[in-house]
Amino acid sequence: MKTFQVGERNGIEALVSATKADPTVAPGHAIVAPRLVTLISRDVQFLRGTYGGQQPADRVPVSEGVGEVISVGEGVTQVKPGDRVVCGHFCSWIEGAFRPEIFDIDVGITMDGWLAEKVSLPANALIRVPESLSNKDVAGLASAGLTAWNALVGICSVKAGDLVLCLGTGGVALAALQIAKAHGARVAMTSSSDEKLSVARRLGADITVNYRSQPDWPAELLRQTGNKGADIIMETGGQDTLAQSMEAAAINGQIVIVGVSPGTTPAVSDYVSFIRKNITIRGIANGNRAMFVDLLKAIEAAKIETVVSKTFGFNEAPDAFAYFAAAQHVGRVMIEV
Image (tube, rainbow, N blue to C red; front, side, top):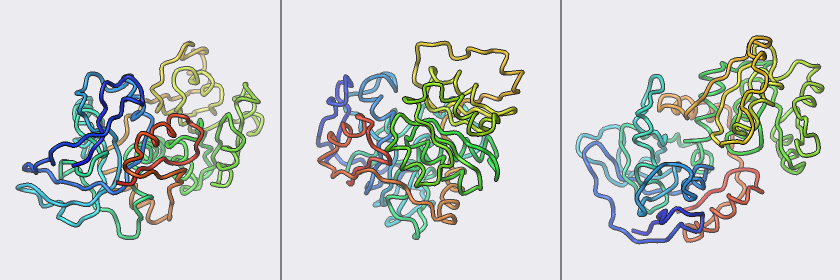
């Protein structure tokens, strides 16, 4: 089968086209033919060698997608050939609370991912896609969508009237925008691009702040909210923006840390804010299969559509990575297999 592999992992140019034997179906597994896959930031980090630890050069990357089951192994009853399916990338996390060992089985990192003509996945992690949902609306949910759902619904119990602040206009931020609006919340978004903020407003953002033209963006957010601040903050910026997120937080605000980017400044510059504002800060690592099922139901009910920036052909995968890494897009970058 045709596939792409991570090679030496010394940059996005390390991605190489290859041919390898078809995966054999094992007990408890299913062979899935990917149809549409979506890039996320850690796919780029993985190629650059800054995420995922030591992995073989022939590892197939990409952690999320949608595909069709073409065969199943012994004992598999959850899915059958012909089913259209998605799968969380921590595919051993079926239900329950987070546990560290979920990182041991990670699609596209510790096991082969979606950027191939066929991939073997644990059948109990697969979820059948409702017929009403298109491939483009589910191919990019396993990371960004599921993370946003877990953060807003599972952890923060988002409700009508809350103000949700999303840093940037990346996949998690856009997913959080749409999920929050579906729950009746208001949404604020930051970006260095007025063009990207214009797209965010078209998608329903109530408040937008350009952090390049307004470097003290927490002060601007407070100004636009009557000094109240944000009830829930999706902290995707990494260590360098956490202190600013604390400044922008409302009394009893909740900050969910999604970004893992290392920084150069102290993560907490005003320790007293924890008490003065009664802030809760919580780290998050994606979500489990049960949450993914709930997310699909919510997307179907609310008719949420994924924003797509550009779709590339399978042989154009290196171009897709380069386009994604340039970070000039708004919406998901997809590859059709």
